[in-house]
Image 1 (cartoon, rainbow, N blue to C red):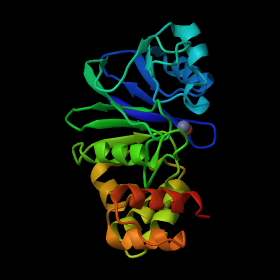
Image 2 (spheres, rainbow, N blue to C red):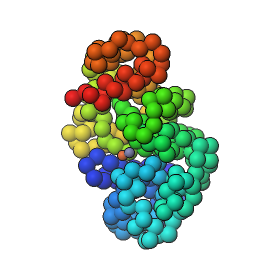
Image 3 (tube, rainbow, N blue to C red):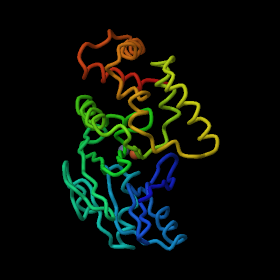
Length: 257
Ligand code: ZN
Ligand code: FE
């Protein structure tokens, strides 16, 4: 199984899952149909399935048109009745080619947000807008408590899990991360690597969970020095409890420029 991105809009990636024994492909969050249809046309592939992480247009906008073309199954949040043929929720299992993906509910960015995890030789997490390299999704519908719970769920996955987020936000995320941890060697190093990738117009994703734990402020809101910096940016006193501390990091990012 290989996974690679098709860029869409300004900074979205439509992840394509391909299997060497099949001429079919799966598309994750196809916000734009043409991007996927053009790929299928050029490489003689047929769309055999779609996974949706959440309802936002940049993740679902192409689904209706793609269904008309290929009539493939669409897995995603239950309430998307117009688009989703196979509603799924936390703990459900889906077969993508021969690999099992488990649904992990991660409300926070939206209330319906789902991630898809597959335990393979190299474990895979399709993280949508929940976890990015160096960042997490904005909390638009859920609570800070829910988003922290999502971060904790993801932190519990195997350290070598490859994480496929939907947006190329890494460099902007790192500017904020470095403002909180200017001396974090792993962060400085990863920032240099990613700057180079971006000048070559290459994706900085997927990322690895072990790297995120060392660099992503939203998986590090328990770290004392980071907490103090986030509170300082907000002109607040550093929070005592984990939810309030996470909230400070998230709100500091929201007002960071
Ligand atoms: Zn979104
Ligand atoms: Fe998005």
